[in-house]
Each structure stands twice: as C-alpha cells, then as structure tokens.
Image (cartoon, rainbow, N blue to C red; front, side):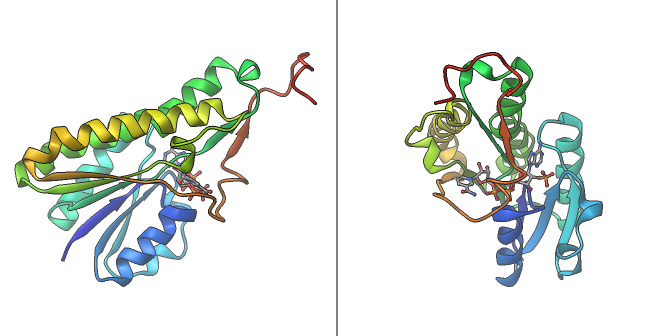
Length: 201
Ligand SMILES: NC(=O)c1ccc[n+]([C@@H]2O[C@H](COP(=O)([O-])OP(=O)(O)OC[C@H]3O[C@@H](n4cnc5c(N)ncnc54)[C@H](OP(=O)(O)O)[C@@H]3O)[C@@H](O)[C@H]2O)c1
C-alpha cells in the first residue's frame, strides 16, 4: 500500500486530496495546524492526522518522522498548504510579507528538505507542489502571492532536473479558481489602516 503525506489538509484542495487518495486505497498522512479540530478525516480507514505548521521547523520534522514511523515510509508528498495576501504592495507590512513567503515558499522548502533524505535512501519518491495559475500569470494587487508562487515554480522546475537521477519526481499542479476557503478565511488583506488613498479608485 502506498503512502501520501499532504500539507494543509484541514480544508479545500488538501482535504479533498486526503479523501481522494484514501478512496483509491492509499494510506494517508493528513497534516494540518490543528488536527484536534478535524471531525471527518479521522474517521477514514488508513488515514492518520498529524499536527504540522509549515512555518515551524520543529513541527515539520516531528510530523514527517512520525508518519514515516507509523506507515513504514512515504511515497508521495503533496505540498499544498498556502494562503493569499492581497492588496497594494505598498501597504503590506514587513510582517505580512515575511509570513506570506514563510508559508507559501519556505514552508514547501522545509517539508521538501526534511523528506529528501528518506526519498534518496529509498531511491524513489514524488513531490507534487501546488502552485497556481497565479504562478504563470499576474494580476494587480496580488504581487506578493504571485511572488511566492512564481518562486515556487522556478524552485520546482529546477529541482525536477536535480532529483531525476535519484528517481525522485517533482511535479507542479497549477489550479485556476477552485471553490474552497481560499477566498474566505485564507485571504489576508494588506494593511488597510493607512493614509494612502491613491489606490482606492
Ligand atoms: N482555491 C483556489 O482558487 C486556488 C487557486 C490556485 C491555487 N490554490 C492553492 O491551493 C492551495 C490550497 O488552497 P485551498 O484553495 O484549498 O484553500 P483553503 O481551503 O483555504 O486551504 C488552505 C490550507 O492551507 C493551510 N495552511 C495555511 N497556512 C498554513 C501553515 N502555516 N501550515 C500548515 N497549513 C497551513 C490551511 O490550514 P488552516 O486550517 O490551519 O488555516 C488550509 O488547510 C494553496 O497553496 C493555494 O495557494 C488555490
């Protein structure tokens, strides 16, 4: 039985991916920031939930090693966790910018780096990185989100060549608009508490 580890499985694409893989007979390590709040996925056979915040090295390390121990290995990692920061770039705070990159880009790197020794030892593995149509084209007032996803595209494409000799596959999924919590609780606006009015129109 193959095993997949998925980040950001509390809702949307990540949660649907857990349900899909499970329905196809896979073992699934569903990871999320607050697994204690999950009430559906923990009832599925062959699904185990783990606390994993992609911005925390410690939690990435702990969850991945526990999943490897519980399932005997990981075959596929879906790097899905992410959110959108929107609004004029000029009004974004440094903290907002750092958090956007820490989650959407450095979070993927953290997870990838932690899993790579395991994949190299097995001479097999697959990373599926969820970027976005926003990693291919750009719209105004999304510069920071686009920045993370375009960066993730470049990172993924280069890694694909680098890891090919080890039989480790690296793939991109670039969704268009999907009805999830992305445009709701996962959408953060840049600082609205500002005197700058030039962008209002
Ligand atoms: N929906 C779209 O139209 C669309 C289009 C293109 C690309 N995407 C991409 O698809 C991916 C999934 O988004 P979605 O549409 O499924 O939205 P979603 O339903 O809001 O799901 C986002 C997930 O990311 C998790 N997350 C956020 N910060 C995290 C962190 N620090 N550590 C771990 N998990 C974290 C959220 O967990 P919490 O419950 O803890 O907040 C949630 O599970 C994202 O990378 C997004 O950029 C979405």
